[in-house]
Length: 156
Image 1 (cartoon, rainbow, N blue to C red):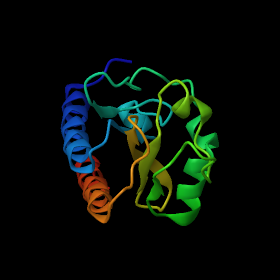
Image 2 (image 1 turned 120 degrees about the vertical axis):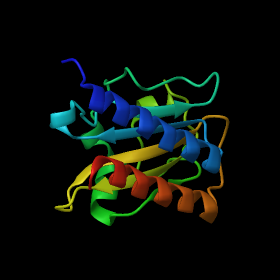
Image 3 (image 1 turned 60 degrees about the vertical axis):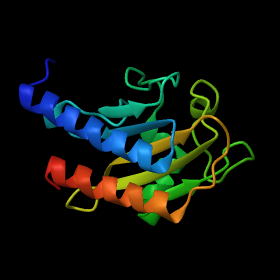
Image 4 (image 1 turned 30 degrees about the vertical axis):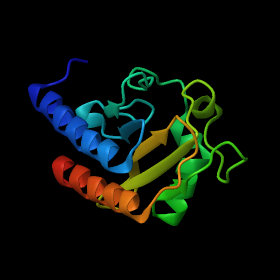
């Protein structure tokens, strides 16, 4: 399915939000996943992303069943950011194994995105690949700002 110019422009704007988030959180990679069939988006694929030089992109990889991930279930239940400063020492909830192995994440900050009806329709991720990362209150505020900006841009 070919994307409309409107969806392409929206994805570009969302990439910009993630680039700002990446800068403000000192992250390695930031991704956005949303279920929105009308725009051709599915949470198993990244619809927007920002990465630091040398960090592997997730944009074309749909190999992880995102809805089955314990981290996603946690966000749906708790309805707040998931802060995981150390993914190397058996974190709970456990992230998908490929995030640790193939994509080398050592820490992450996840921000849920809820549709108007309260459904967990997507989330923003910030991954740290250089090592564990003590996520600060300022970095959590940056995530909250990005969540609000994404919601505004997509009309939630």
